[in-house]
Image 1 (spheres, rainbow, N blue to C red):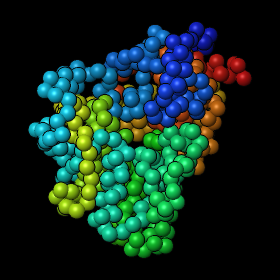
Image 2 (tube, rainbow, N blue to C red):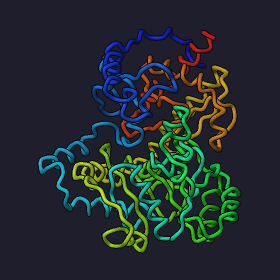
Image 3 (cartoon, helix red, strand yellow):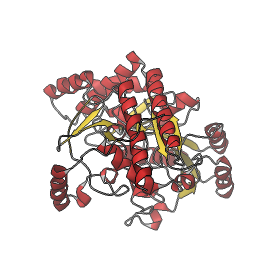
Length: 441
């Protein structure tokens, strides 16, 4: 049994409130990415002053156990000494050259050695850019126009992929963005996640026209939703039979679920892989990679154009390489799995004790506590969750020093910097929070 709930701690964000007001005068909505806004939970975000290990510290003097990890990149925790040293050393030599460096070769070799589908890789600056480039590669290589995208999956703010948005756009209730013209999305076909028969139907309707099937192999942008058993294998068979490229967006899952990402964990090798977040070690970097024959079609080796002034930035490459090297040397995945399982089990116990409909879904060090009594297999399932309850839970947890994603439709991330004590504190906070909510109802 959990101990009775304590009264909610005194909690104010006066300094952050002033900062947010100032930000709103010069930044749309006061934030530089919608995922940082608190539209789904109400209120205004704390402004962060610094971070170290598993903790965030805001300008109002609060410490939080952090479960967003900069939305995924900080698998080693914040300000890891080896990453910090690598960036500092790189900075002494200059922050940007617009010319090749040796470190680009080193990290490209590390990525190719780690990710099963990748023989060659091209670095870019954001996951959006990587997804856009992967789709262009698929269209250029196949000579086909159409793309299948899964409902609720997010691949950045590429016009052609915003036919139905996930992530922050789901949070904000704007599934189709103004400014995206019908022409740019005309060749994007939507399918529910975890439904291979729906993909087969689209192949039948558009035979010989589909360049790629694009998806997150483990969805993280509608909350954590794993693939059904056999689903990824069926997609692999369908695409291979149709001459269509299978693209895994592993921006979240790459290097997190295993060193080789979800494709290593599930044993399914896509044709093209999109990477981000961890690959930059907390700095702006992303990449896309594939077989040598496919990647040799990218300019200047081939005719498919893609370029970027800050691609392969030396600071980002240093941070990413240092992160990958730590993961290769320490192989922390068993410990991450154990910590994350402890957290998932604790959330489930707390919700059950509070008699709250719930399901906790987890793959490796990614998880979501859905306020929904049934398993979540797709976006329609996720939308039936109690988002109002989540909003109340979020604020109760924040007041108790736990920083969760500010939306029911986002995944939590556990890092190697978290300890069992951090997990147990979080579970106790969840029990207190849910009990406080129940008593105030």
